[in-house]
Amino acid sequence: MVGGAQRAQAEAGKRYEVFHTDCPARDVLDHITSRWGVWVLISLRGNDLRFYELRESIRGISEKMLAQTLRALVRDGLVWREVEPTTPPQVTYGLTQFGRDIGEPLEELFDRIGRSRP
Image (tube, rainbow, N blue to C red; front, side):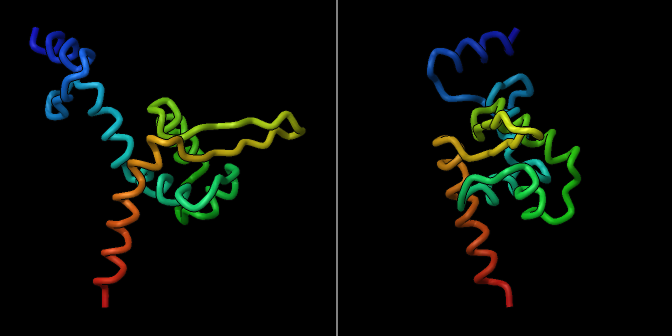
């Protein structure tokens, strides 16, 4: 039962083994590097956005995929969600400190790609 031992090791504060299929950090990494996860993190780097603003900032994403991606990133602790009790409810999303920490190298990667393209 390698998986159980690996999880216990991770919970004790030791380094995660993301190459193991049952590693909890692997799910987070999968959500960040998913087709839309990166775009959500980059879009929220500048400021907090409402759902429709976020959808408009990411060309080509459907409402369904945006909702699924946001749910996963909120569950992973990368994005926070605030619902304003209005009619209809307004939902705002922003990056947690963890999300900002993860988004920083992604933004640098995007900048490097943008500078190197002719």
